[in-house]
Image 1: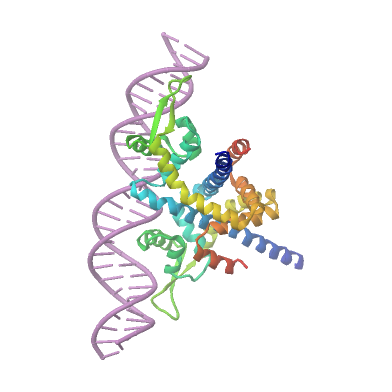
Image 2: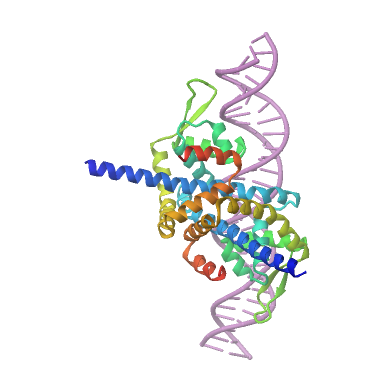
Length: 162
Length: 162
DNA sequence: TTTATATGTCAACATGACTGACATAAAATC
DNA sequence: GATTTTATGTCAGTCATGTTGACATATAAA
């Protein structure tokens, strides 16, 4: 019985630790998205627009299918956001050279400017957190976040991040 | 000029590092919410229900105002979610003893069961990431996430996490 | 020539945010 | 005791963003 009890205790401690890890992610994500969210309302855009602009900026010439795979949303969902970004001149599409069915995605000049404007406060927030926590902590942050990501993307990111 | 150039290079490196830190948070949050999201559809609940259940479970007897402050949403937004949870017997309200205007929030027995069911896969994911990354990395993860959180909540969490 | 793929579009619907206005009960203040 | 403030709830309308399902078109691959 005492064995079980002490086992229980360590499980409680472990569970509390895990719950904190979960909560921290919620709070961090909540605040980390709040900066760009404010700017986005100026443009009457939402968080979905930011995500699209971010990933197109990071991967110029990516296909629609690739973007869909990253965002994990339906093409109908992306379509609305994407066509708004295109209509208003932040994103442009070019036919693929090899495969002409593909519509390769690029930020326009204003798209780059928008992306920069949105990411600036986010980068500032991360920069502050990084420098306060120190290089070793940053390594740990990356390791754990990487471990939270599904296998497929984790593998892909491991490659591109080196 | 060469000085400026080399300075530029280090800024590029830094920016790439920050962008990775931002992306990682996106990917981790995306996958980390996907497990409970699936379970929630069974109940015809959404992510908002999970958040409410999580925080009420963590803070039994909390007031509506406290929950609103954590979630950072309007009372009208919370109202729908909360009344659904109450109607279907996952949450109950009790009048405050000192201040009888307050409606203190508690999980019912089924509420506890639901919370457990939702958090199990999430805890498993965090547990795996933690054990793969190691104790030192976990410390770093916590430090950086804490640094990403707005001052007020950071201060509160620092207290309760010790 | 046929089939599969990449993309787009129309329509209908659900969720969860928002604003604004108003209501009630209880606490706090004058 | 009367008035004001606070905690909470509710009604109504709107918006952003996700979903499913059906269908269309151009191009690549078989």
